[in-house]
Image (tube, rainbow, N blue to C red):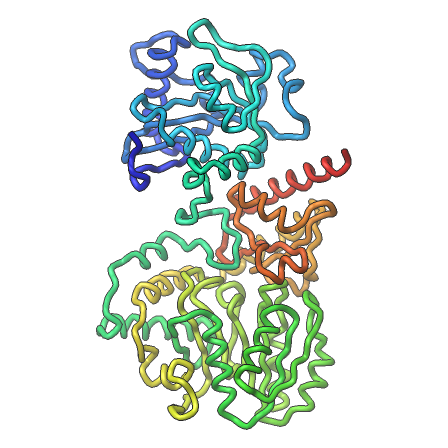
Length: 545
């Protein structure tokens, strides 16, 4: 029988009870069923490499029903059984030995075996290994071949417990599994599972307390409790940014920018939109759609603003005209000089609007001299997408004859951000996330980004953003010759690393991005660097052959 998928959990063993169950399952399998080891009174089999093993388990409820062990340290168990083992293995790989595969009798001949092996393969890939070495039971040779294993050398073991040495490139295993309809639903990356190897600019992987807040029972957006919770959230957001007020809208960050454009359309003034990437260009598009009177000053992608050119363009504007730009240009990883631009605008009497979508929560953001600013609940704030934030320094006036209600900032302000149905779950998850938005978190992200850029350059990757203008939230890289960013991204996907490379503007330029907006741990970044180096070296060797 096959248990319902929701009852099954595949994971690394991490507690004493799981280890005890593993050793009991090993005893039943390798002592009682397959006469490979002598019996003992404890009815537990403790492997001689136990201290080095990483155990992958399939758990049904609290019961361990399947397990295998991974070990990367040489000599392998097979080294003592197959003379000159490396002579049988393809060169240029980093091997890991897969051992002690055991499944409870009633769960054999089900998809559990493949799912267990797949979880172990993806974990090994994420650790930098790319070749699996195994001694497979001769009873299942057809199955192993079907999954991409290549037999080599003579049989090992003893009569009644004979095994065939085999290897499989872990990439090939994943490719075969993904093409197999019977396994496709099992081996696809588990997008519903929180991923510590998530380096996307969004959605990020929220912290456990943020996930718990989202999963709580919803409450009415008209209840006193919700209104008070939202008021407290707005107060905390203003305290974080030194803003006068903020409205929390149900929608994406793009909605926030549309509301900013709508506010600018209410005055007969001219403006200046600055662009040095995809999202600056989108501001210009939104300004055009709102029929604003403006000039667009464009700079090369990945380059800093030329402040002398900006000043010259500002001088063509009149007092009370406006400036609009992106603080953290997500598409390139550039942090534009917000403080300098705000000061330049203030000296000329210009009003300032800023897209802080990727910067808020990632770096300090000061909105004291900013008239309008947009942000989102996801990205650097560490919550889920779905809430647009619009900060404002003045009390907007209702414009029922000029603006649709959803785009009228005053419509939201006059109802304390609740003119329409709201999401108590999104508000609660953002409130929970804000508790972690601290100076220490921002400093940690900045330190990790500096380290990451240094390691990427050392590994042969090009980082286009100059160090002094690079934003900690996004690191853009260009792979070395012979490796495209799209190929690299797909390879990383198979290994469990989620990076950004599919957006049209990234594909066009051959860029891949690693986002730190979700504050991934240093250990995950170290894994990423190790795997990136491995992929680059393999491609270099393949190119030279």
